[in-house]
Image (tube, rainbow, N blue to C red; front, side, top):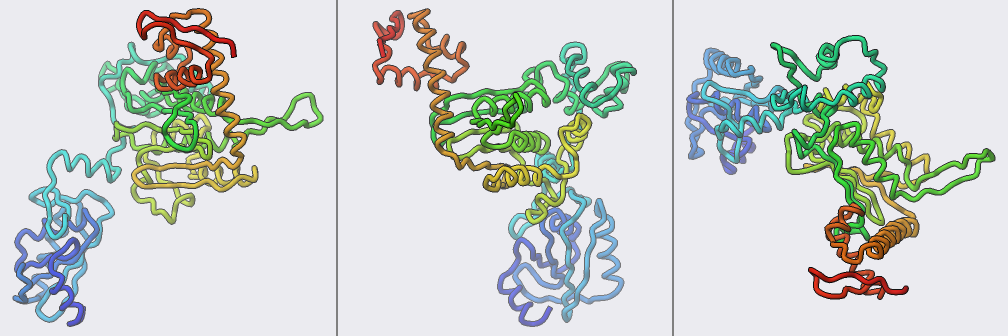
Length: 447
């Protein structure tokens, strides 16, 4: 610190990383606020009005301040700097948040240290990754009512675990349940893997897959929501993609042709598994999304990069947001738990001669696969529309009084998708509505 720097600090005044104090009163509050935020400096001997009052700096004073920092929970690291009769205390951003003073938890908001409410403390701890969703138990999950033995046996088979212990003991060894008394209590990992139907417990754990016409989220041609269990959700999402991804065939000289999809299936699989393993399950307003457009395919999840992972380390280092989920996926060889998934996606696309994937991480994490063969993408959409049209015409011919709701149920399309196809058929002169919406019927015309 020099005179010029001090003049600048005084001219700017207190801020997010600067605090002025005349005494040590409530200084532990400022310590934890800076440690819980981005760090900062406390200038002892300067008033709130930016007037230099000065302080008598002694080893005893420094020792007293150090004791205050050590008595925070956990202890806070500080550094001292002197400039004349001003003592400057530097507080680094903490590595073991949250920090607590004798009067509570604080964070820095602008030039003030703000005390956190109960709910704010909970949200703060969640955001710092101190509470893991996959480790929390849920008393609502009833072993006798909700547990699926077939899914459990399938997991053991995939993991190569012999089914020699009783079920309770194996589940406890897997880290997905505990038995403090007579009742077996499951954590969220156990629920996500072994629930008969996740909709009975959680609605926000689903994967939503959608096929759009064009490059915008306007016309939905096909949509499915999968929320059975983690393994089934992965497999069902892959089947949705395979249903709509164009495939070409190469003759290999053997009776079996080689199937080459537009984009390697394994790249999609890695992206879907990554989204499931790393999503923030505390956010209940957002699903994992698999969205197909003419020019791209996006796979996204809420959560962004895990806390502590810097953008420059992306693809080089790995931090597990849901370590229990990752562990079980590793047991069935769905992941390697070494942070190799991102590089595997890049390698698969490179080997296929395709453009590099694009990764976006804000509050969401998104993998974007670019589709360069636009004609193939368009043909895929046209093929899907053609099949849907054929189904609609067939159903109308068999039952001219069929309702839109019945068409939705039989074709598995949204109401908007049915309405779009019916309008298209009417505009093309292939069907005619006779009578009112209620009580009328459809007539199929010659093409």
